View (cartoon, rainbow, N blue to C red):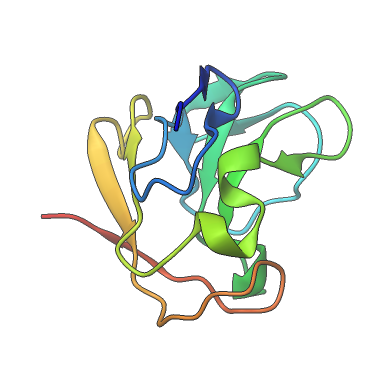
Length: 121
């Protein structure tokens, strides 16, 4: 079984370690448009770890766009995410070089399950 890696969409498998995100949210955001997150100007095709949504089922990895954002392909389907799934964040004023893991209970249904993420220590 081959594992393909794409800079924007991450691994094309159900691996529990995801491709890195440029930034992670520190508050609830609008999932559209280019914006500044944790001191970083996020532009189209940046991967963003969204972890602070008021509606926790919206949390996950997204690909930024000038319009509506979409979930990254490696975090878009039920078999892509399990408790313990990890992601590295590369940039940000406060969250650069941090690792986060999915702490929600299995099974996880994308778009329905409240997805909580916890910083790895």
